[in-house]
Image 1 (cartoon, one colour):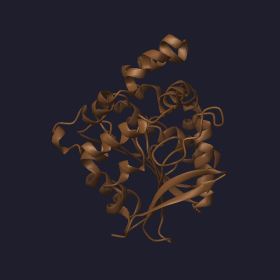
Image 2: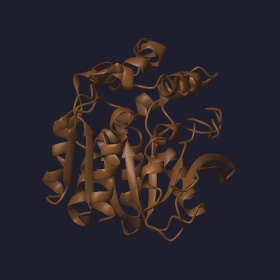
Image 3: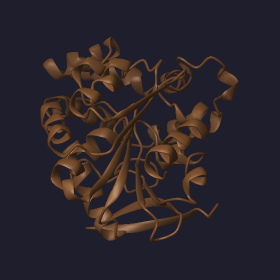
Image 4: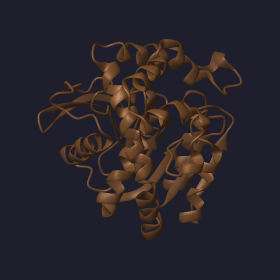
Length: 284
C-alpha cells in the first residue's frame, strides 16, 4: 500500500485539492465524488487499489477543500465543473485514465468522456446515473424546481441541505447503521454549513436538469465507443434505482453490473467488495 499524498493544483487560477496514491506508470484512475461529499469518500477505497493503479481523487469546485469561488465570479453548473476537472486532468498529467463516477461525479465524468473519448480507458459507475429509469420519486421536489424555478420552489429545497438529511442519505438502505462512520457525515455537513454553500448547492440542483437533458448524448457515447464498463450499485439507493444500473447494458452489452445490499454511499459499507470488483474488471 502506497502513501496517500494530499496536494493542490492550480487550474486557471482555481485551487483544486486532490488525493494522490499509487505509482506513476500504473493504469491511471480518476475518482470523482458526489453530493454533498468530497474526495474524503474514497478514503477506504484508495488504499485497496493503490498497488495496482495511479490514483487521483480531486474535490470538485465548490466542494471539500477545493476553492469555492463566489457565485458572481463562477457559474455553478455541471458544464463549468466538468471544464475545471478537464483542465485538472491536464494539470496532473492524466492523458488516458479509467474514471470512477459517483452521483455528481457521473455527469462530470460522462462529459469528459463525450469530449475526450480517446482519453477514457474505462468507466466505473457507482450509483452514477445516465438513464431516466434510474431516477426515483425522490427527485420530485427537485423536478418541481426544474419545471418552475420560483423562489418558493428553491426555498423548499433547503430541507435537502439540513444535517439530518445528510445523515439520512448515508444510512438509508443500510442494514446495520453502526457500519456507517459518523466522520463522513460530519465533514459533509461542515462543508454545507459554510457561508454561501447553500446557494451554490441550490444552483446545482437547478442545473441538474441539464444532466438529464444530456442523457441521450451520454448514451450515444456508450453505444459508439463501447468503453470497458463496470457498474457497482448500492441497490437500496433512494435516488438512483437499480434499473438505472441495468440500463447501461442496453448500450454497452459487455458492461458488468454488480449490486450490493446497501444504500447511496456504498463505499461506506462495501469498499472492500467494490475494490475487488474493480480489480477483477480492470487489473486482471
